[in-house]
Amino acid sequence: MKVPAGTLAPLHLILGEEELLVERAVKAVVDAARRADAQTEARRVRATDLAPGELDELVSPSLFAQRRVVVVGAAHEAGKDLADAVLDHARHLVAEAEGMVLVVVHSGGGRAKALIDGLRAAGAVVTECPRITRFDDRAGFVRDEVARAGGRISAGAVTALLDAVGSDLRELACAAAQLSMDSGGSVDEAAVRRYHRGRAEVTGFSVAEKAMTGDRAGALETLRWAMQLGVPHVLVADALADAVRTVARVSASGRADPYQLASTLGMPPWKVKKAMAQARGWEREGLTKAIQLVATVNADVKGAAADAEYALERTVLALCAARRR
Image (cartoon, rainbow, N blue to C red):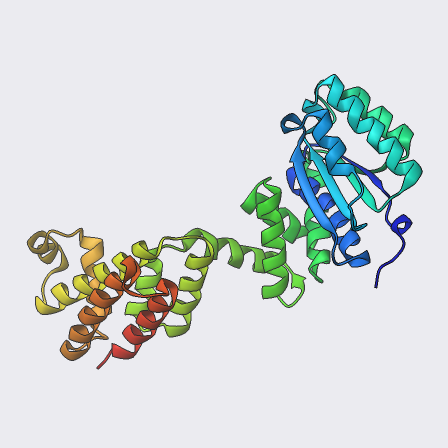
């Protein structure tokens, strides 16, 4: 079902430099247009890539009366001719409302500042997206993001999250959504500490350590964190192989002083001590199986398998099962 074109304002000015908020504001307009008409076409262009004549074509009514949203980005970089053309079309759209929606994105600075006043005077719906720099504003953003995800967050947790993540809004938005989901909607300081600790400690070696100790649930959780954070598949596979080889070498050496064994094997003492502790849970048959598993997954992540992530998960489960075999 289509609703009348006048339902959505034909002219929007998105003003500010906070990139995430700008993107969301643009998306909100496009989504609203598509709720009114699912066939709405969205076109996004950068002001510096446009000539005034090209703008005429973009905002001209479709032959089939199809609704269109035209987003002109970086309008603060527009020259005088283009800025004048944008303003002329904006006034026309407000007067005629022919199923077209014009969205002008402007940082608030630059050489086309007069365009802002002109668009306001023309009746643009203005969405302010100022850069968020103050602590209180970032705290408010975090609270809003948690609420947006259906949760609530304590004041202490807000501070802890800002301390852990910093000022990047995308990171904060991602963390707020993840925390809301992981904590059942109620985010406290302990949840933030667990979240940050999990992110900070996830490497291929932390996955391998949990797999070699038979911590099936922990190994899978850590692996999934690693994949979500973008740790390369090959690094996880290499860490698994290194852990298996180290335990196999230490296990084959029998009982020995860890410092003497470290010298013999050419490893740091701490690594030998860790491998000796892990070796207590392994028998020869299980280590033989583990060596085969890590050799296979090494080939898998380098192209032998269609899904490298699945291959790693399968290997982690198999390593946990091979322990004490």
